[in-house]
Length: 344
Image (cartoon, rainbow, N blue to C red; front, top):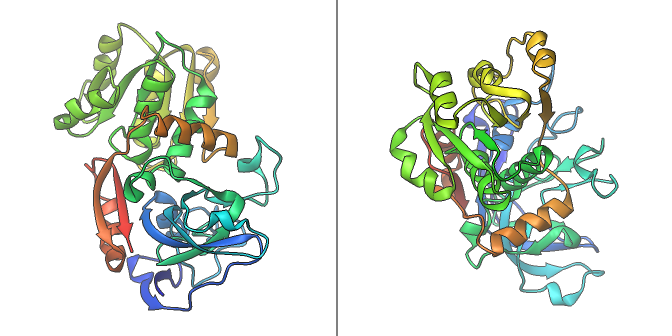
């Protein structure tokens, strides 16, 4: 089969298109013909070694074993089943829950042995992938490309919103609202939880689209008077911030939060380190959450909401598998309008 492998830590030049044997499923696994695989920050950070603190690593501290096939947002068709897998799995269109873990229900995502497809296991930048049958779920939509964009970014967004539990009448500010996680944060907070949403984007030409996704107000983070515009739009301080940007908007977020407000982060595309005056936290009684991925039950609840069309896929463009380098380079550009998808 054709696959794109990461051959070591570094730039996109570490991505190599190769011909390798099609994997064989073990007794509890299935072989999935990959139909679509969306791109996430996670496989770029894995390639760059950005998860390590003081050293290179993937999701696990011991680092990535190269070569590794990246890709975690995967949909496809089951074409072979292991000996202990029910034959009814054959031919199913599935979406893959993206990690294994021995953690108990509700704590799978914080287990020490959490291992990620595309980092600790070979992933979806390939024509085929093997995965445990119990971690393959029915696709929520009929289209492979539309269904593949939710696994990692969708579960991360869903978990973020479930952590902060916004209520109708409360206001949630979403940074990076045009991106993969951000566009889903807008939808989940507004259409599932009923909150008002202030969406921050770079280009206000996206305003109409953001409002279609559920935003009440759309503002540009490039504004020189952003804090004032946020407070004016909301008629005062906001209840919650869902952030994927990090340093670039951190100070603004804490300034516009009300006393007793909540700040939840799942990314740092605008800077991984920041300055924090602890007095801001304790004098404003701010609660902070770190968030990434989520639980199997959250994943199921998300898939149900997608199948009920409460959450829409937001896709910028697709690339053939052979153009994985170009796709990852495009992914890192600003101003995208949704997810980037590879099509084997």
